[in-house]
Image 1 (cartoon, rainbow, N blue to C red):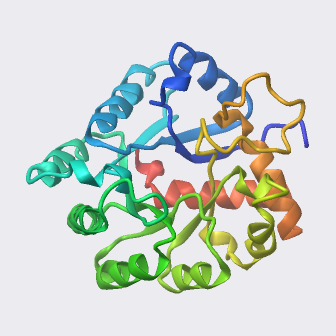
Image 2 (cartoon, rainbow, N blue to C red):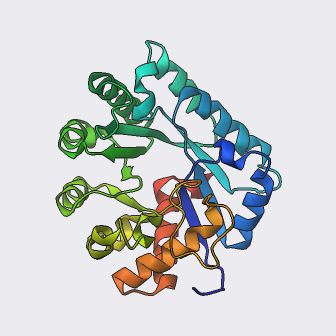
Amino acid sequence: MSTDPRPLIDIGLNLADKRFKGETHKVLERARDAGIEACILTATSESICHEVIDLCERYAEEFPHMLYCTAGVHPHDAKHWHKASASVLKELASHESVVAIGETGLDFNRDFSPRPEQELAFEAQLELASELQLPVFLHERDAHKRQLEILQSYRDHLTDGVLHCFTGDKKALFNYLDLDLHIGITGWICDERRGLDLQKMVNNIPLNRLMLETDAPYLTPRTLRPKPKSSRNEPAYLTWVLDSVAQFRDESADIIADATSTTARRFFALESK
């Protein structure tokens, strides 16, 4: 991997995760040193929404224009959706740090929330994103057919959307691209066991629809050298994702870094922040 930092944007960082507790400042310093210009902190529940907004505020002075966040309820937490949830999210989304609605979508792999409740929360958040004209940060596992059906009903009203941490098959990829959605690639592509299909497909993603993310503290790139003592992923490791994407697309890492960062700044309207 090149040692020269390239300006990058990590569009998916779970900085409120307990594995970062007590080390947030050092993690952000390492990210900045690695050339990470901005990070989008992922919200997965109402309580996490408050936490990521607080993190954006707390580190705004020392890390200016670096931290932004989403506001949303993950399908795993859809069972906690209630009558006032949409109003709560709408108020949270008015904060200047919030740049997207999500993480929202469907997860029929683990089914931590009943599927009807997942769909209810998902549609409510798509309606909110449409109303507020914010992009959606999407999750999907083993629910491609149903998620696509729902998205097709709302796509004309949505400003934009990104399939975060895409690990689906080629059919799903092309269906989402046909809806003019973006694709987020994580360290999954660095995995010589689980990432083989993604390695073969990544060159099918138009460069202007591609964005990079760590999904830290999860999905530490298996290509990372030297291997860290901790298995915890962090935004400084996004450069390994970049290099794997460049390798399997047979393109310059510099070109991909510039294009994905430009796309992320436009997608999340960071230029106006």
